[in-house]
Length: 483
Image (cartoon, rainbow, N blue to C red; front, top):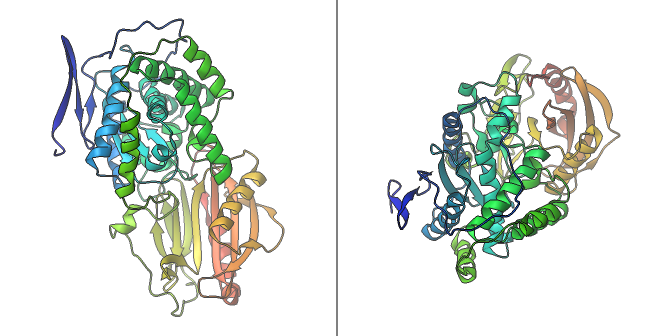
């Protein structure tokens, strides 16, 4: 079936629901219930104030989804596509008619990512990680997370968030790459020309919005024939994974309102669950379909851009002489988030969450992995705490897990970065070339609560010749997040 092929799910005597395959869209031409049921005294969920139109939701979501599909490893497998489409169609059909705007364009795209994660963009595009499916024990748990994400779309929480943000205009929203804001504990996109920080408004929800999505998601599940308690069970699985892995993943943009399983169970007790065929065998086959795919990658690994040759795989050759920093500087931009002055002989390398500036022969492959031996990195990480010291410690712990042997080389100290309080932490580790290297980590908060970091790397023998450049670069950082 090609990308333009349209499948139609028809009900006798009722209008049809059209589903296009990924890069496919599902247009809700009418509400079609799978079975007539009576819902009891369910909780009334009211959409928040929103200055955007549903048509603008669609415009924003489609453009963001297009970029997300470029950024992430999309799974192209008919069996997986069809199964996700079926669940998605059932949930869309069971959505409240008064919320299910006819302009919304739904799609359900699987991603070959290992994190337990899923996200939906304004207007309908939804993305489901392989890790989410593999962590589930039954179809209802996957459907529960999809129903929760669908509820965010129906309640238009993304653009409701943007409504709260002064100065965000439709043109800036539609031009941003919102897909890069989720998963892996990382923050928003920094690549050139993008609206950095947008994703915080589109998909970092408040606890109030989360509870609304839980309750509406539970109601949709019951109408679609799923036990809403499966949503609570999946949340428990996500919570356990977050604690064991050290990374918040899905929970980072979906904060727990508290007593989640309890109030979902209470809501479920007021709902009548529609009849649905037993799909347990189909779900086992669905999960097994992932076994034929290449191994899932992590969000913390390089983006697909590097696989497509967009940007150099190396800057010179690791092991050759690395020149000292130039004495002349140029101004570089990190999207709309920051500007910084760097030596003119340092090259910029962008990813979906950071920018590196490296000299010749300081970035490239060594024994199957890409490393950089000299230079700086600026980026954003999710902050698990609003206490700067705690957030910094969590960030350094994540660095240490990815770099065995990394350890503190002195006490953290309080300093200033871009006229705001920051913490500087000296570290030492083992470089890819076998020598000791010195790492400096400098952190501060952005206005949205994310952690901004400035990281310096240099072999110990070159530390003295890079010290002045690192200091000058750090002092030149200017953050533009509206604080």
